[in-house]
Image 1 (cartoon, rainbow, N blue to C red):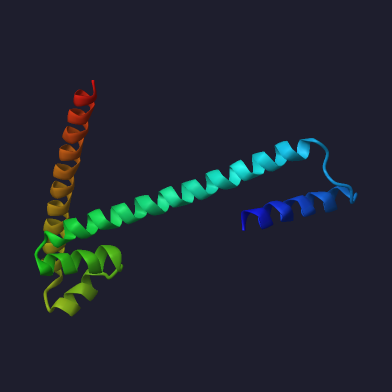
Image 2 (cartoon, rainbow, N blue to C red):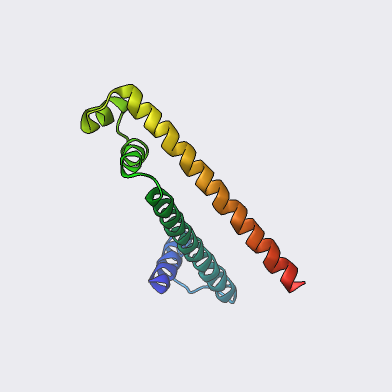
Length: 132
């Protein structure tokens, strides 16, 4: 696929220059540069996709720690975009109860995330100290 893209770019450049001749010696350099750019793009997409998967896994684990009703409120409001009134209708609660449950659930998630970050930082420091 990368080779097809490179060749398509070359074809486009040739057409713009209005000549059918091949590239000069610089074409190897240009080809290497383009392949490097494509490789970097693929790496960054893969890395961001990997980060997204990691974040989703962390979010799922943190959400699993919440009581079922709190988890449902947070998911409906924050992930699915439901309004307080819509969640209240679904749950059979008043809007104020939905707001309170969402507030407390988010606070619990923040605290759990903070503990996770602190633990990760401690682990990293210990690893750095052991390597020294």
